[in-house]
Structure formats: structure tokens, C-alpha cells
Length: 253
Ligand SMILES: C[S@@+](CC[C@H](N)C(=O)[O-])C[C@H]1O[C@@H](n2cnc3c(N)ncnc32)[C@H](O)[C@@H]1O
Image (cartoon, rainbow, N blue to C red; front, side, top):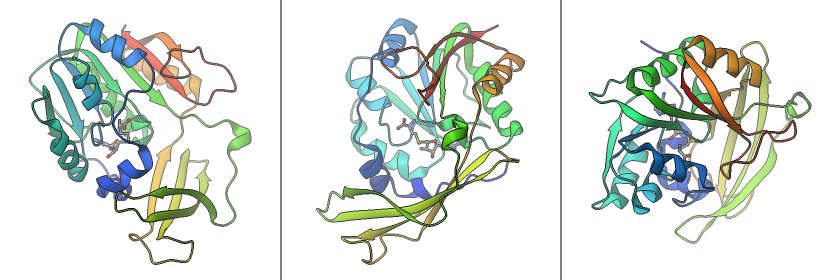
């Protein structure tokens, strides 16, 4: 058994989409890799299908999305229609499908939800289990640069978004670090229409484990992967010390 993951933020898929955006593929590398795969494709932590759905709409066939949040999958299903997508409600640390895939991806910091090495290795083991011998695995992480790793002493305004009902949502919160466990913990509250309006939902907490680049390389290595390319964004731009988003394209080693 694994420790539960606090997915309070993802329990309301409509709000998740309000913040994360409508389904669209940003950049070209995912679409290129999906088209080159020439076989079924597996997305881990697919959420409400923000990426899966547009991939299918662009002609990518035979997609499977694994996701733990039932609300996210229910929202995804409302948009699926006849698209060739199979949605599976499961934990990326503990699932077994009876197929192998030439392309598996985990996009949108899903790996950072793995809070312990046991979680990380369980997820990587599931990838090993489901990836074909010459398949490709793409995973991204949000490593933190030391200069940016500063606790917020108090709540600060984060963002304002418009709900589909037309009302504004003001979000404020604070983030702080547990440097022993390498956790970045965020606690946020959202108010309708103004910073002191009624609460949209109970305040939520999101805990992500930050992963440093060389740590990630070692984890991938010791779990049977080699990195064949690294990007700083989904256009395929190279990594730089300034670019915080790291995308790893891997194969079995
Ligand atoms: C930031 S969202 C990214 C969603 C999607 N990949 C995207 O790019 O829009 C992270 C997703 O990972 C899911 N997730 C986190 N831990 C998970 C787990 N152990 N098993 C399955 N899904 C998980 C969350 O529910 C959430 O939908």
C-alpha cells in the first residue's frame, strides 16, 4: 500500500480546468513523438484530458489515460465522444494493464506528486512494465533553483481567473519548503469576486516533491532508463540553467 496523495485541488475538475486551461497541446514534441510511436500511447496522470484529447483530435490513435482523480476523468469523458481514448482510474504507482506501449508520457509535473523515493520508483517500475523494449518515455519535472526556494511568510495574491459561470475567482496562498523531504507545500484559498468574498471551496493544500536535475538523472539511471534528450519546453528548446522546467526523453537502458 502507498500513502494517499492529497488531490483536493483536483477534486473539482471544472476549477482545475479554469486554472490550468482548456485542452490544448502546447508545443510540438508531444505530438511528434505520439505520431512517431506507431502504436498505442499511454499518458500517466492525464487529468481532465488537457493533452490527451487534443492529441486524439489531431489523429493520434489508441490513447490510454491513467488518472487517480475520478472527477477529472468524469470531466474528460464529457468531451471524449468517439475519440479513441480509454480512460483508466488508477494510481500511477500501482496499475497493471495488459498491453505494452511504444510511447508513455507523464506531463505537467505528475512525477513531482511522487513524494518519496518509494513512490518515484513505483511509478518508474510501472513505466518499465508497460513500455516496449524500444519504446520512449517522456517525463517532466519542476526542479527548483535554490534562489527561488524561499518560504512565503504570509499569503500573497496568486491569480484571478473567470469561472464558466462568469464570476471571478481570486486566489491567494502561500508556499513553503520542507528541505529534508524536498517538499514544496502550497496552501491556497479562493474567494468569489473579491479577496474577501465567500470561499469557493475549502482551502486546499498541494504538496510536490522537488527533484534536482542530477538526482533525476540518477533515479532514471538506477531504475533502468537512459536519457536520450532533454528539453526546457514543449517546443523542444534545449535546457539552460535559467529554464526551470525540465523534460526528459528516455529509453530503456
Ligand atoms: C498538474 S496535473 C497535470 C495533468 C495533465 N497531465 C496535464 O498536463 O494537464 C497532475 C495530475 O496528476 C494526477 N496524479 C497525481 N498523483 C497521481 C497518482 N498517484 N496516480 C494517478 N494520477 C495522479 C493528478 O490527479 C493530476 O490530474
